[in-house]
Image 1 (tube, rainbow, N blue to C red):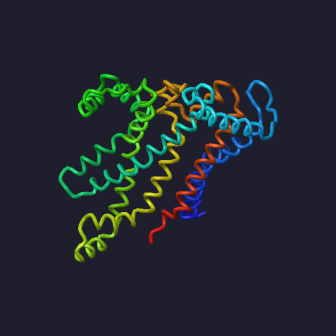
Image 2 (spheres, rainbow, N blue to C red):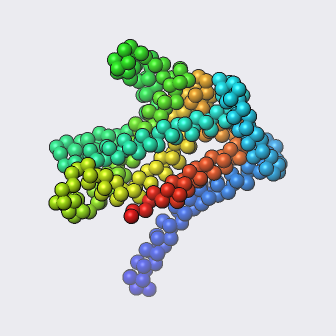
Image 3 (cartoon, helix red, strand yellow):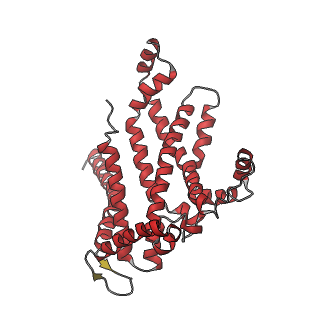
Length: 314
């Protein structure tokens, strides 16, 4: 065998090994886990005893809990978090997603536009606003717990703007979820702004030059050229942001605790799945809730990508 034939064999072997490694991880931690969760949702299992097939009973119990949650929300809304924690987590995470995704997308776009300007200090600005994306969410949460204290740094500015009013961010049910949303927006906007910045730098300059010659000002160029060309990236950011927001766990765990904090205001569906599986040892029921979360994420993303046709550049 010649030297070149031996080199090609080694190259082919290395290619197969490097391909099999991510495919194997993706199969076991992605597709296999998903199929196992779907299967587990049809069983009752507490690890200590053998699995028992119960059919759709877990789903029936889950939707019954949601129906009871709607009734409690109308009759005694202050007790929803005690009587129907799963419904409370579902409600909170939908509100949280509605608060976080639009703001983080808009803020990321604004940061990217500022960072794309050819001015002195732009490189330092890009590094500075990307730093939150490189920090561990748990560390960020611990820092913000200190900042959100009643006499903390944030209330120093809030009281100056509101004639002395100091919200108790972490102990008041009305402010706990917004506080978690602020931390999420601060961290995720930095990551998505880099995505927008890469898109802005790839846009064709000839189009902007032609628009400038035709008399279009900066605002019109942004609205009629930049925004349409960035539609695929905006869709990408909205989809990823929605998935991350609906699955939020770490910020709620650190800032509100496993019980969701005062009034269950920080309780999320991911926390409820964790408690159902690892505290109550009801793995089948927890898997049914995870399937519902998957269905919500899939439906919302389908709506964004297909129904709105947001990714197409006309």
